[in-house]
Image (cartoon, rainbow, N blue to C red; front, top):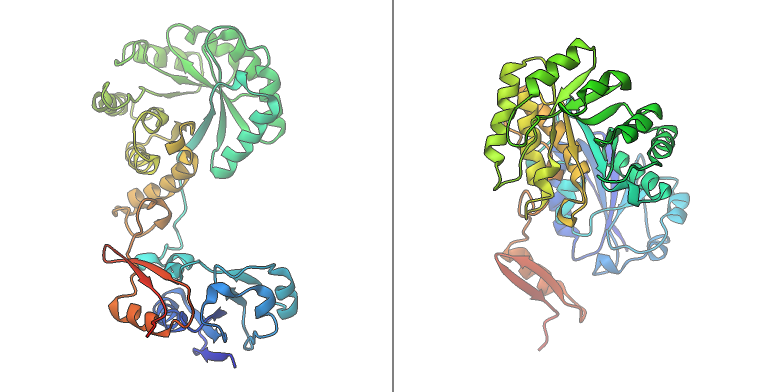
Length: 400
């Protein structure tokens, strides 16, 4: 017979299904989560030792759901189609995490982190560049734009190649605009820029003394950069000329990769803010994520923090190299975390667990006593592996 253990109701009631081995650990875990998540729960221990061996077809004739249940959570390894079970119960059915120790994260209460109701705001715009767009088909560009927008990009930047003029840029920009995307153009080629802005591009990257005289003809915002790399030469003149012509602008002093002037380039952002307290600014964080041998999340978090404190309201990124392939999503999470931290004047800690990607925010260990209990209850020939205390524990049925 299946056994139901019901905890008194507080708000949402969730019915959990498990096997005999995992039942005590599940009860302990849910008892810790329930007060912080404001949930009521019931646990049904099925007549099977290993929860991972269940299937939805096997569960269907055995499940018994208490009244007032809002949803059912099956073990993460439970195979089978959930739809027939949902129809049978008239309730949503979902799979939980494959490791019940991850239930804290499943319910967004990992390491005590509970997001405040006001969490989630931001004021930094993400511009996601599609590199070498002239080498791609229109279909590939549209598909990439959908992916970038879904990850959090506000503007799709069309990266052009130096050299020959790309005569298809206008068609691409128009197609992106018709698909609902905001678009910027990254080119110093006047013909490419004119075609792009005529088709609906709203931002031009970039402008300096070479082409600033053309900006008033484009009718859109521009990104102003220094005339010479590693300096602020010509920046004040460009700002003054563009403002006099009524051209909206944002300034990018250009962040340099580590090893070729990174620290000094951050100083230039500070200096621009000192000289022009009200100017809009942009930073190309991809210069760091793409050119540093490290997973990109930490860099994106740090640079978004710098931007938030300094009032830099747009970042340009890309996700070409494999270790930076989730940069847009990381920037989207980071801008919300940094907005919260800066406006609340509090460290960005215990608020956004999704940005801790290389290690768990806390170690979920069974402990020696629980491992011993699990080992004593194993009644089949399958091994269970647990990584705890810097050791790999292999649990198996005891034999005489």
